[in-house]
Image 1: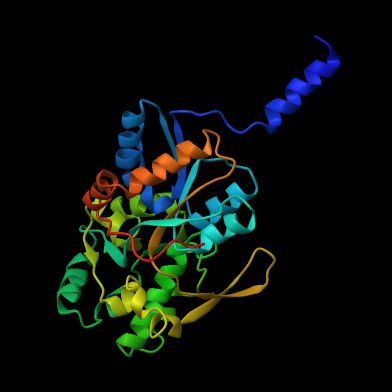
Image 2: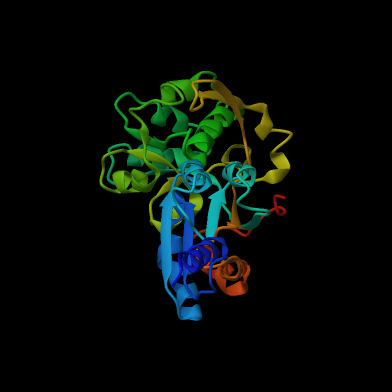
Amino acid sequence: MSRVLCSLLVALSVSMPALASDNIRVTYAGSMGKVMDQSLGPAFASQQHGTYQGQGQGAYGMARLLASHKVTADVFVSITPGPMQILKDAGLIDNAVPVASTSMVIAYNPKSKYAAEFAAANSRNDGSWLKVLATPGLQFGRTDPYLDPKGQNIVFTLLLAEKYYKQPGIADKILGGVQNPRQVNLEGGLLTRLESGQVDAAAGYESEVISAKLPYLKFPDEINLSNPDMEKQWYDTVSFTIKDSKGQDKVLHTQPLVYYAAVLKNAPNGVAQGEKFVDFMRSAQGQKLFHDSGYAEPKGKALY
């Protein structure tokens, strides 16, 4: 075979889109591990007579890996619009559609010495849980607000609770700083740390906490970030600042707790296969699987 022909074949193999496949590769916000790897992924693979491969991580961190081509996937599922914007700016997606929603909660270990106090505070709905959470010696876990939307959302929830229950300064007392290394844990291991007793309480989404069968503090809409109708009149009254990768201050604002799915243009198993998985998540069967894992129905419109 001539060198010219070999070069032509190599060039064609690089430029050709991915061949159609029955397999699917999905990247997702780390909090979705159980519903993706134990429910939606296997069900879709069985339906397609193919294989499922899933990878979860803090949504911002995963979006950056995808945008830099360090990771490839057919579909990315994120919570909040922010991580999707990274892929939009990188030219990897054209659209992102809502597939589910959730609300912010705080889970606690039922064997923790603070469990009875959390349970009592939860039944009163008077904000007394804030004082329990601020107890000296209590170990509170959360994710990094730079890497993970959940890490941002728990800060927003505490700032809103501070205002709602009129307890100025309580959020900072609990957090000990926005990026407090004594509290911040990697997304994938946070609830595992809670279940093992390494922390007494942890920030979580209601969907993942229900899936893990953990007790939790349930908050009103004014605090849990679940109601898009409250975004402008109430949620947007709080914000905070973190350092970005360049050390510059970045002001963060609340975003709706909606899960969005997008098909990547460089999908290794083909764009059509990615679209099938997104359609499956939005189908009656997919929505039942979401619901059975504690997720609420999708809210709002497509992002772009």
